[in-house]
Length: 238
Length: 238
DNA sequence: AGGCTAGACAATGTCGGACATTGTTGCAAG
DNA sequence: CTTGCAACAATGTCCGACATTGTCTAGCCT
Image (cartoon, rainbow over all chains, first blue to last red):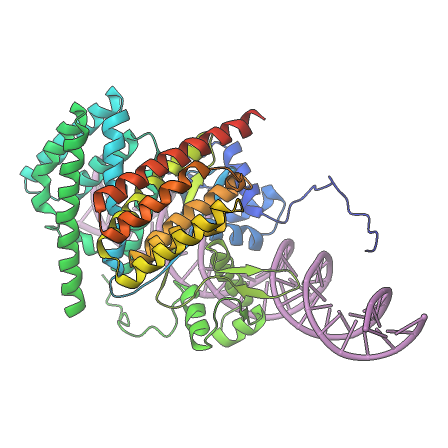
């Protein structure tokens, strides 16, 4: 071993992770979701690095789903940026029954989220769930597109668990759906038959009836899973 | 509206996703895990794009855990790459109760895996589960380190579900554990009290007793979760 | 005055070249 | 056979330029 004098604590610049520098800057400027990031040239200037390096870091953030970039337009933050975040990539092979496999994994997560929400949700969260359910019913009865309202309703349940990881993992699986097929769940009628059951689900959650809530959610998941697989089969055939 | 003749099916180059071009090249050269990627300049030459663009795509792959790059050394493939691979990033915020949140998500996944394995495992899978359990017991009774055997046992259960996604998502959470704390589950005694119950678990799975298997797994998970949280609390205090 | 269009501007995408830094490898000396 | 050194190779960073496209504003036409 040659004795080379490695500077131990002297690290004025950390080339190891430029993204960390960016995160620190975003934190410092108190930028949040929906805000626009400064242009690349300004980022490069403020961080004292070249635009190429900034671009690589931004590309990394983009692949991580933290930002979205628009040529000509700006760069927008779409997920929370933090210097203390953990990145866990997951790679899956696309096969014939990928859809049913994803659904099989999503199912216990959604059901457990309902169980925990029923158990630990506070008053405000229960009110939000009721509110979202009523909005969903209103849209559904009016015959309009109820999918955004449905998403908000389930998001309210995920929030009620107090565990954002549920929402994130489930969202990860949803993204996988969209990557698999361009928009299989944009079929307007998919899962429509389960919407009336959402009223019972919300009421069971708010009432704290864990067994009933879980049972209803299980039934809903079964229906949706079956419908999704039917549609996927149709796509494969066609 | 000016009538501009948009080429509908003519897309000789897709600037939208350079990574796809790379994936096609990797697939064509039949490169697998552990193989070295050609140098960036050669990739740029073969794809007909500049090195800057290649580098951004490689950065994306790096953040997705597909490759690892070594300055001066080469670029190695560490995850299966093909045009039919799906890469899903998950970012979690590191907070005080990250551990309990991860455990809360892992719990329903592990339990569901047991449920499905009990339901659909074929004869060979059931034999493997029994075999792994016996090996685990042998190591445990001998007072040796039983953690590798425990991992193999649970991996056998995951395999028995016929759904590799279960193993992958659970493994993803395990990686999060290791990134959070260097090795919280290397505590030799963690979960040791649950090992005897593994015999009952294996027997219930092989016997096809779904209710019993799920109940035992729930109890095991509760014990392990509690122990893990205790240890984490100790780490925080110390 | 109001709406619409065209042009200037801004921001990202891509390119090409250059140099720095570091791992790798092969050769020669001990 | 081992060790040390030098040449090479590959990634990291930087710079400058142009292309492409969204955004905004000023001016024109109705």
